[in-house]
Length: 328
Ligand SMILES: Cc1cc2nc3c(=O)[nH]c(=O)nc-3n(C[C@H](O)[C@H](O)[C@H](O)COP(=O)(O)OP(=O)(O)OC[C@H]3O[C@@H](n4cnc5c(N)ncnc54)[C@H](O)[C@@H]3O)c2cc1C
Image (tube, rainbow, N blue to C red; front, side, top):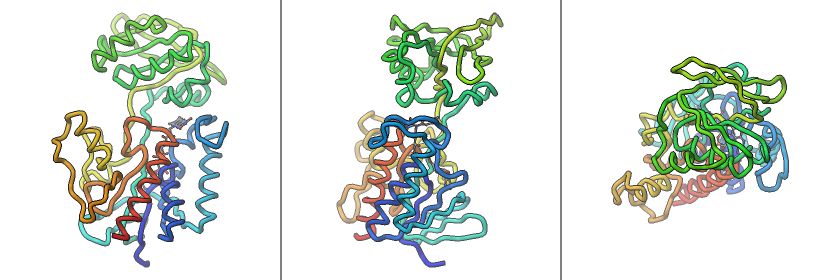
């Protein structure tokens, strides 16, 4: 197999946006798109916040992007990369019994939302069960919803939902939140949020859409039925970065540390101010990882925004960074 200039791992919005830009830059990218391909949007129904598409089903949005990518003669292989070697150049990537060598890599392997694991929750996903208030809150105008979780994300989801829903139940299985004090206080003092502690959801009720939940107090074992229209699971996300953990720097939650994320960490005091590595050509590469020539984009990097449009935007940045780096 010939050496590749740039190989993109992942075919969600970040990987596909990177493919469009690197293809149009004449880099003839190879996309190893994952199996199943397409990423998180393949798991959802209506998407109403991707610019240019007032309303579109998630899988249809991905198929539209793939068509655009294939129209640029990009090769897409829907397999998972299972081995990597970033210790020498060109880099090596492996899938099935194949080996690819490549000068630059763009990692866009995304993340997975964590779910409660109830059969009823899986069945009603996209029919009232969601993992993203920014994405789906709009569909719950004037309705009652529940948020499950006790961390900062759950607090943010609950507060976001108060802009749409008439009542938000915040259900947490412990007696205290893990969230920062200030976020917890904001939630507790909000007039439209009812906090229910020491409680877990045992069933999401409804045939074709969410109609309520069964919630059980862990200490007293008492059960109660709550009528509502939506359940937002906010118990965390897991970036798909296991494969890279010994090769590039990740943060404590497994997100890939790029220069842009280092800047965030320096700002928050989590990293010393001199944490950046100067580059040979004195250019700023926001998507560069700890290994020169390896770039990363999308939800595998971004634990803050986690949207299809922001993932695509980061994919574009990674493509432009890879192009400039290859030229330099
Ligand atoms: C239920 C749900 C609903 C959502 N609704 C919206 C919405 O309405 N609007 C919105 O803007 N956002 C929404 N989001 C968020 C949005 O889907 C993500 O922010 C976006 O998909 C992130 O894109 P990505 O390309 O970074 O990663 P992903 O979409 O996660 O794609 C990752 C890709 O990497 C591949 N991959 C992983 N490991 C490997 C490997 N080892 N080798 C090769 N490939 C690999 C996967 O197969 C996949 O193709 C939703 C998310 C969920 C879960």
